[in-house]
Image 1: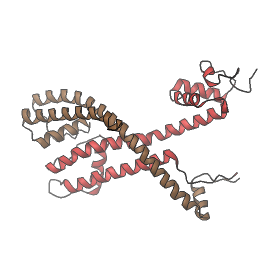
Image 2: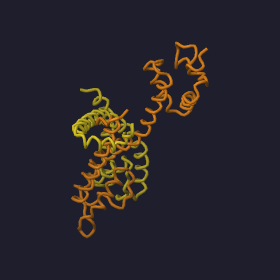
Image 3: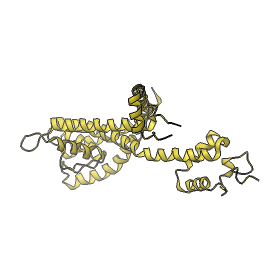
Image 4: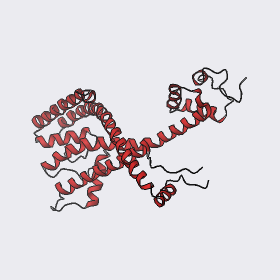
Length: 173
Length: 128
């Protein structure tokens, strides 16, 4: 069966695109303003690399202090607004990007659980399993059960399949 | 007013009040200019901390100690609300962007050559 890419990029892909665009835009704004507003001791503007370096150090809240907005009042005022918006937006974008592997893992787990239990689960039960599986103990529980269905999941067996006497088909009595 | 904005109102007012008290303190007690004080406070409370404005006297240090401890907590709480609001907006935005990109890509893939290229590039192609 041939699988054709249908052009859907999904929520994660869209998040990634928007986050990358936001990061580039915020860095660009910061670097551009730094080039325009701040001059070095000789009155010359800084280089582009310096500006991008300064913007990254700023929005990640590292703040080495080797460059700063400390040259004119206008630069300081812009710095105030840029710090407030930039740190928040970049924090959000970075956390979005960082959550992509977690989300992928959650979906993988969801697929595994679905393959195991099929239609035996209601939506709430599925959500309970996949979301509780973020913490290590219950994740190992679910995974152990997925790998070896005959291992009984003691404390969650009733939550998984309340209607059945056994939790899977291979060891149904 | 929309509930998202309303949930933001009280933390923002608290932060504004706190920042203006800080600006007043630094300008009146330590003779900083308004812009310097505001800049220093924002740089400090966003935890960036360039260190370009000198804190020299003991009284400045003492005030800054208490100001930072209370302020970082206040700003952190307010930024949590702002992050939640940005998350809602971004979710809406990225859904639209995703739909737009999906539409563009699906228009592209109507052509057979592009279709094959994209199928290979997306890693989903394989011998049947």
